[in-house]
Image 1 (cartoon, rainbow, N blue to C red):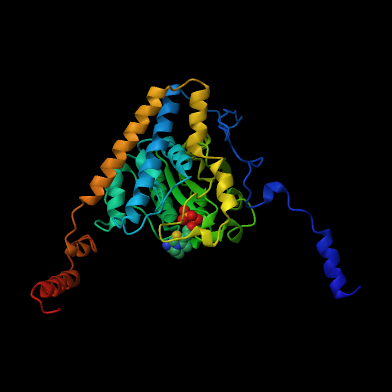
Image 2: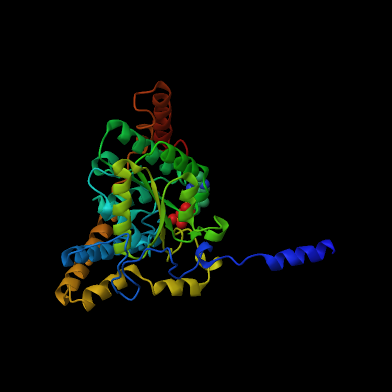
Amino acid sequence: MTVKSTARARKKAAPAVPDTLRATGTDAQPELVQLLTPEGERVEHPDYPLTTTPEELRSLYRDLVLVRRFDGEATALQRQGELGLWASLLGQEAAQVGSGRAMRTGDYAFPTYREHGVAWCRDVDPLNLLGMFRGVNHGGWDPNEKNFHLYTIVIGAQTLHATGYAMGITKDGADDAVIAYFGDGASSQGDVNEAFTFASVYNAPVVFFCQNNQWAISEPTTTQTKIPLYRRASGFGFPGVRVDGNDVLACLAVTRWALDHARSGNGPVLIEAFTYRMGAHTTSDDPTRYRLAEETEAWKAKDPILRLRTLLEKEGLADEEFFAAVDAESEQLGLRVREGVRSMPDPDPTLIFDHVYSEPHALVDEERAEYVEYAASFEAGENH
Ligand SMILES: Cc1ncc(C[n+]2csc(CCOP(=O)(O)OP(=O)(O)O)c2C)c(N)n1
């Protein structure tokens, strides 16, 4: 047998990859936890039971609508030149609101840069998020006031911060848990893998919440992994769950379970929220250059807001008055956001020197003085 024919024979004999092992795919797979179908039907899952009152369902719907409105307004503001950049969460509202609402007050979230829906659930004023994207502040909120860390642009770094914080919780003997958000692209970062190792061996109470929106800028998930991302957890020795990321109820139930699992001393959990980035990576990106329009169209049918609205209407849990009130609130939010951004004062340019060190520092003082002198030279006309 020639080398060539052996290779051909081997190729033929290769076993088919089972569907459950495929890294991507747009349909619900056997492992996907779902409690609300794209058609707006409630389904039960034996491991993640969830009882909800009509009021809770309405409140989740309100959050989804307001978060989407805020996000849309921010995108428009960027287009009008009011923000330097915006990372839209369009399509990921359920993953963020579901997981954000699962947190208790004492729990701590470590976000990346797209978690505007989680920020909303932690009561961070949306205008504070926009201040950073407008470039008038360096974060804009006190992380310890809301237990919501500042946005992290360095991909995956926050998973290490979260793990360290969670290890601290254990040492304090506290009854809290931590949740670290990151994307499918970040799952390839060393930081994330190091965080998994430390969290696992130290039994840290941290939930790793990966929003698999299937694109890391222009890189599809297939370039990050050959297996579904949640299965990575088993290699590190902790449980992994894949949840329908467009299903707010499933995201709520699974995250609640995972946070309780972590806070009870059982160590970390990886949740992979299987979702889709409906918009561009950021306003600087053009997805039409690398993504098929049909893919985006197929995901529109799984819209997280529409399916909850269908449930509310079908079950008679909300009336026209309720939907009109949410729409009116959404208009008000849009107005507040637009006016708020446009009236943000320019910061003092020397602020950049203020938080380099926690204590005064001679070198920084010298640099500040140099800068003040340099800036003043423009007013004096020396640099014109
Ligand atoms: C350490 C590091 N490397 C590269 C980048 C540039 N970068 C910014 S966003 C991004 C893709 C992230 O994709 P993913 O983790 O899937 O998150 P998503 O933006 O899709 O939510 C990259 C590579 C960065 N910010 N930090």
